[in-house]
Each structure stands twice: as structure tokens, then as C-alpha cells.
Image (cartoon, rainbow, N blue to C red):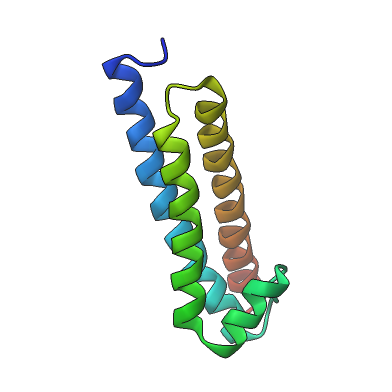
Amino acid sequence: MVIGTREHYRWLRGMVIALVMLNAIDGVLTIVWIETGRFTEANPLMDLLLTNDPVLFISVKMLLVCLGILLLWRCRDSGLAVISIFFCFTAYCYVLTFHFDAFNRLLLTG
């Protein structure tokens, strides 16, 4: 696939939309895990936001990730931006795998 073709942008747009959705799912599941007391937020700034106001936490999380995605989208003709989008997508898939594994462990142990 060649960068800059119509097919490339359609594929990349789908990945960007998926990134926004994965970020939102990660935010909601993070709130669930923190509220149950089973996990802690590793990022100290986000932990502070989450502890004080979960709505502010999810808002800041969505804003920061969406701004980063927007920047990468605007640079989508660059191979580095495309690789970065793919890397972020892969990272969020890994994070969601962690969330689902935690759910699985919770169900198995009760």
C-alpha cells in the first residue's frame, strides 16, 4: 500500500477512529478498576485527576489522546506519522488485552 492513496487514507482513518474508541474504553475500564480498589493508576498526574474527579480524568485523557491523534492525522503523508498511529493502535490493543485479562482473572477467582 502506498502512502497518500485513497485506499491508504481509508485504512488509516479506520485505525484513527479505532484509536479514539480504544482510548475511551481504556478510560472507562480504568475508572472501573480504580473504583473497585483492585488496581491503581500508574501515571501520577492521571491518578490525581482520577482520585479527585473521574469525569475530569476521562475528559483530560480523551482530550490529550485526541490532540495527539489529530497531530498525527495532519501529518499522515509522513511515514513516521503512519508508523506512530500503528504503534499507538498496537499499544492500546495491548492495554485492552490487559483489561480483559484482569476481567477474566476476576471471574475465575471470584
